Length: 455
Ligand SMILES: Cc1cc2nc3c(=O)[nH]c(=O)nc-3n(C[C@H](O)[C@H](O)[C@H](O)COP(=O)(O)OP(=O)(O)OC[C@H]3O[C@@H](n4cnc5c(N)ncnc54)[C@H](O)[C@@H]3O)c2cc1C
Image (cartoon, rainbow, N blue to C red; front, side, top):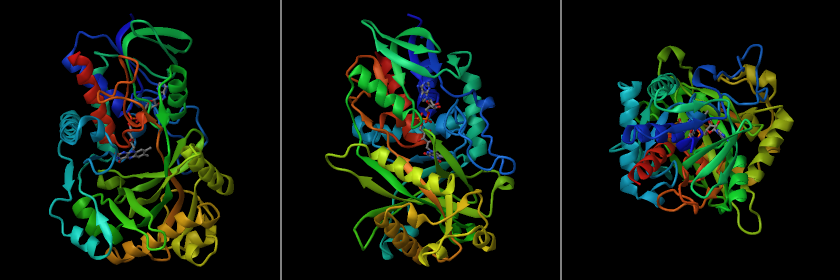
């Protein structure tokens, strides 16, 4: 055996697996294979000047590399079982929360000390929301910010590099089951290990699907979330964001009874492109450092779409809609709320004259040509509902970027140890379909490391 444990993917799931393993069992030989670059080499070429939109790099620096999809994220660690994944269904609510708090303590130890922990406990906004038919979910949110999140990752890497063998720019091609372990292939070379932890995140979704098919592990997939990213002047939401930082608010539409929810709120942040398997969608982040903040706040409004038999390819459905926006806009599209309501396309002139200045160079267009009516109706209804608790949300100049798609990896069949039917083969993080967030993915990494150490 070359290694006792091989971890595939150096996102939060993989990094925290490696951390906890080397802490509990320093004698183990651990390797981490990562398809993307080392942290210092991760650089998205979009500079807003020469390169304005996604050029489809072979390895997307936003999604891949040490730190995973989380490396340039807002670094919002939501400590809750109410959203961010269903890890608690496997390991119990108490343990899931304990692990998220443990990850938080590690983040503080590795450079995050001094960052703020927000909480919905006792907030007056809960009442305000209910009075307006909106529902605020409970959570504590540690906001590291894109800058401090990066520092934490740098420090974690400095700690791990002498304890773990890192292989960067080394996508794993195949995983084969041996009698007493696993053989992975990367760059034409085979490496053997006794136990293998797969943590390939969203960018590894297609690879994960193929690997499960090859090894005979069951998967299921039936959900995708579709919507837009809303951008407005930070003052509109400042009463909420100053106290809660991020508010997860859910609304049930009158028209169809669909649930629309806010997602990934970034006060004084920026809207960014996200490239998943060559399809450009939208996301957002913000810095902790006031000097790097913008005058806008952004958040997503998403509608979950569940499919029933015989349709199984929910991600394919989301991809098709994102592709449509890429086809019409050459990438991400932006539209003023006022233009959408009046049934007219936003033009470069209308965007230029808008009082809200976009933080992302997107193509002005018409989102009604992209998003299904039912989803768009739900989003419009929610914008009017939010306007009651944050007046100004439904202003003409509120910007809507499309499309935002939250792809859910298909759920991989694992047991309460996050172990597949193959002994010693674990699937964790967003790649497992069980987690959808930094805190849940990290917690799943710590959990699996403890399982391996215990054995
Ligand atoms: C712009 C942006 C902002 C976000 N903001 C937040 C936020 O504020 N809060 C929050 O909770 N979540 C946020 N998220 C989501 C969060 O980043 C993910 O939930 C989290 O990173 C999942 O961790 P993971 O380790 O499971 O997977 P990932 O972070 O996706 O890491 C998986 C890694 O595996 C690698 N990989 C894939 N396939 C292979 C292969 N075959 N061989 C080797 N390596 C492979 C990838 O390159 C990647 O580096 C954001 C995401 C983005 C893109």
